[in-house]
Structure formats: structure tokens, C-alpha cells
Length: 333
Image (cartoon, rainbow, N blue to C red):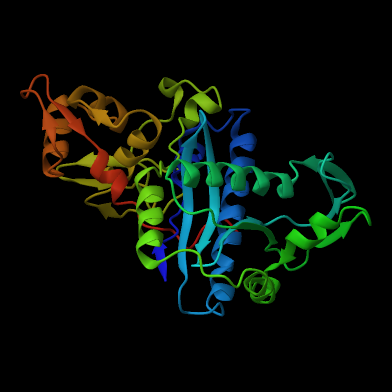
């Protein structure tokens, strides 16, 4: 049973907005685009595992996706955690193309792709660190000691993995997506003693969910972009990089000659993701390129956003716009 469903990381939405709002000649655009591709690829890799998870035993499984917990001043994140009465299983997904070579626990993972070699953090050591943090949390919870297993799943079906003959740990922990059921059966046969009762599993889940903290990075700061330099205005939903003009209570695109009533909502979402979760009438006027603050007032008022202060010093809270972001299935190619 899935206890915590997977959700699209908000950094994907933030990078999409940043790419859209960055000046066209900004030298950081390619860096932003590469980061976006990386996060989209990782998320798609995790999504692809859903097909294989359905073949796991349907009973006595609790699945939590995307847990991120602070421990010892460090956030650790688990793509998927499977809790059973007999053991816990951490799954780290890697959607990486090319040829992957694993030499030893002391060496990075070497990826060869398009005749270029580069090193990555060793994912076997990564899941071992996750196991350490999770085990420490459970000990602090005064729960029963339960075995914690970990796997690295290579989700790209075309990827080739190669291991040094001496690095047996990597060979046992790194599998392809299609091998998850066989590996789960292997781990289950290894741990046949039931350790956790149903109430103890519920206590563990409640504790982990209570301490889960979604990542919400400041992408402008990350890429050293001044928010004041972002492109302002309301973009046409249909025409690439075309700005709309405010006409009465709607928005008009001179390029496709269409009228849009609520196009400002997307622009205000960009503002919330990139600049601030609060906005004033003046800031709304500036960011939407409106001729007057009164138009900003009427737009913000029409959205029924929570606010503090009187009309002249009113501050609107944009949290609801961000909460309404739905999971996007149609991402970058």
C-alpha cells in the first residue's frame, strides 16, 4: 500500500519558470536548462518504477516515496522506502544513460557517454549513508532493531553496468528496474523473521512523515540571478515568449490574436516560485507590467488570496497558487 505518493519536485517548476523568465541572452540559460533536464530525467526514472512495483507482494507492504528528513544537521532523501514487518528497503533510482563502471567503494562511479568520461558520486555509498541516517532515527525512536536493506536501481534500460571483480557489494546492490521483484524475493528470503507489529509500523510511518521536509530551494540564488533582472509581464499561453496586453478584464495577444481571461495566474505563480511568496499591489503592477496599481489590486482581489494589512499596505500571500501546482506528466522531451 502506498502511504506517501510521489509528487513532482517543486524545483522542476521553479527551473521551468526561471528558464522562461531569464533574459534570452543570459549566459546562465544553458546551465539552467541542463539542471532542468537532470531533475526531469530523475523524476521520470522514479515514475518508471511504478510499473515494476505493482508486481511486488500486495500484502504487508507500506511504500513511501520522496522522504526528505533532517538528521545530524544534514538532509537525507530516499527515493522510495518500503516497510515490511521483516525488514526495511531503501531504493535509490538512477536514470543515467551510457556505460557505468564501478571500481570500488573508494572510487566514484565512472560514466562513459558519447566518448566522454565523467565521475559521479558512488550510489552504493549514497544508499549506505541513507541507511545509516534511517537506522539512527529509528534507534532514537526506541523502536525494535530491524534490518535495513538498500538497492540502487538503474532505470534507463539501455544503460550498461560493469563492475570490478573485487567490488562484489556493488554487483549485489545495483540492479536494473526489471530485477526489482527477484531482488525483493531474495531479500525476503534472507529476512524471514517478523519483527514489527502493525502498530509499530504505524508509529514509524507517523514519525517519518512528521519529520519529512520537502525541498524548496531559491533557484535565483542558486544560479546567482538577481530577481530584478527577470523578464516581467504576462506570457501568452500559446505563443512562445509573446507578452500579453491588459484590455479591460482580459489579456490580449497581438501575435495569435486571442484573448485570455486568467493568464495573470501563471505570471503570479512565476513570481511566487522565483521572487517571493507574498506580493503587494505595487509589486504586482511592476511584475505584470500593468499601467496602474489599481489594476494590480483588482487582479489580486479577484483571486481571493489571503492577505494582511489594509488596502494601501496590503500584502497578499501566494501559497495557494503554489499548492495548486498539479503534477506534470508532459515535461521536457
